[in-house]
Length: 320
Image (tube, rainbow, N blue to C red):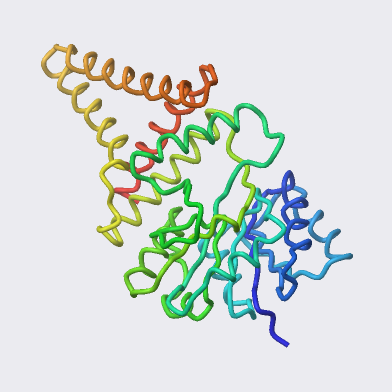
């Protein structure tokens, strides 16, 4: 008998969180599901931990022969799934006990996908909390990364760390775009909406998701997000959003002013613009501190890392 839902966890080098992630799926109140784990060529002890869990719990572990990226891993999971619905959970996340049930109940005839909020787990460190607060704060500019709706509502996108799709819809649109380095989930949702289907958000379908906690990790994550966003824009130009281009445009202006200074011997403009940009980032950081009643230099450090990581990523995405 085929399961109602196929839960797919794609992971690579996830030994720190994989056990709690799998445990959260195994303990779901909704029981009619299969668990598929795609290992994207891990080099740590993740596979050993998964194989130990397999001794007690039924799951399908698929090991890729080389590092192939998140889109290929997700498509591999889809091809090997048996469920009518396919749910995705990130390996550094934990699902709430009623996660699958709440996602399933939000579907109607026109809905092709349902997602839910991804919030911080309890007892996380201060740095994770600060980065989470920054993401929420800057989302007010236009991103829908954090949603505050108290009821089931229609949205344009749900992050891939907490989303469920009708399998027939994924097959109809040929799954995730494997040419993208990241941003494969908003690009997929863009094509779903383009087909005329609905994407819904259920605030009760909660996933607890860890955040990055260092400037280096945040820069690297933002770089890949920026790279993938530009790649997605080149595929579907309507995915461009003005606020996402600000970091890349700022970096380009700085570079142009630098070369202008070298040519003319006048570097005043680059100094003025850089000062203005840093001042804006400081003001945003201070506003976040006031809102969340927390004083920390990490607000500025993390915002600086995210801003320039995303900007450099978008610039590289123009050529890759």
